[in-house]
Length: 346
Image 1 (cartoon, rainbow, N blue to C red):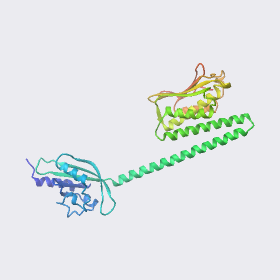
Image 2 (image 1 turned 90 degrees about the horizontal axis):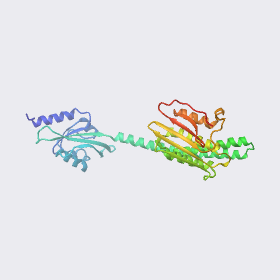
Image 3 (image 1 turned 90 degrees about the vertical axis):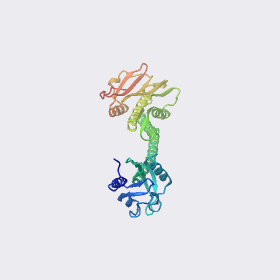
Image 4 (image 1 turned 180 degrees about the vertical axis):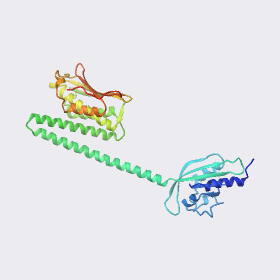
């Protein structure tokens, strides 16, 4: 049984009137049949003179936007629907508003009478909040970059002061400790520089370890033909905080090799390796030097060993030391079922 056109119009007006959101009912000619109180109030339109007028004649003509007109005409013809169309509306009083418009043709089975339901969402404040957030993030990034530069400069100054002190002291033991401290500060500076370059988020470990080892080699290897420091890693990535610990472990293990594996100017090679499968990973530092001393099991762990153990525990990883024939390989491995533990290293 066909529905009387007046009933269709009444139904559409009832839908609009019950809405708490800005909503307009248009006929096929895009004239206003009715609108919600929220629509009239939000867009400063006189509710008395609006019905019967074209939508584009409302207010001071600010709704007469070519793109909106074309979309509504296509909707009225049944060729399209307006889905989240964004537009700027310049009000006569107040700032322009950013709107998201949706429109659909109401089908009541009567081809001679068509109606369009137009709904409007004001997203001005949301867009402004998003912009402010983006501006704050951008400002924070600039401040972070400035902080990183200052940290790098401070580390360089500290390393320089330590090196100068090492050159002035007469005690060989004191000079040794100061040189060791200088090397560690330079390594941390290199670590900080690489992390700063990687920004936030995931860190590509192969490039990260390569640049880190380049920095260590530049400060501690005099003859790069005599001692070679290489990185062999897969395409793994890690979060920035994890990469900090991994980088410090690499730094300590490589320094350890450079100090102990090649006495008397021996030639040799140090290889840093990393591979992962799912959550499990293995970091290794291998050398082809003189190998472990016979009394290594009874030796007191040095500062470097203690640092590596602490960092491995932090990563829920296990440290193991093995003979490489020739040389030594130290591995730090994380597995889901692994117990945290360490073997005594040199």
